[in-house]
Length: 212
Image (cartoon, rainbow, N blue to C red; front, top):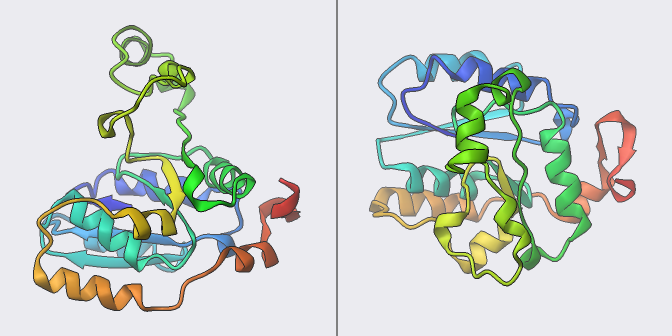
């Protein structure tokens, strides 16, 4: 999760993560504070003992650099990108993990799983941007398998992919400063979870991953 000056929104975002049905032993939260000057550091710190949360702070380097730091800091083989205004459905992380484990070959899946709060979804504004103007969360065109998609048709938030996919094909493009490149190189050399590790653990509700 990357964030910048969104302290007022973070309690709802982090509260949504607290409500996940996926057992907390099965996921970690990497929070990247991209040079916030509001109460973001304090808000994040207040959740450090409530969630499996690791907090990183960098100078304001932009969204791409913040996401890259999160990717390299992650220790799990599956990465779910979360924006700082996303309040997840309680089953969101569980659904992402199940979808990813159905296709363990890392090259083959990047899974956007959209969702919204019911009362928000019914509002005239949301209906316009999702069904009429199709500016947001409009995925009907995905059914057209002949279409060649470009990078502008992929959402960064609420999507997931194998970490190895990004490490192999390249992470987000930005003018990454030298100090950050050095930090990323160190983090990339740290031990990480493997998919075999995940298969020895269990998801919330006591379901083995292989049975999802």
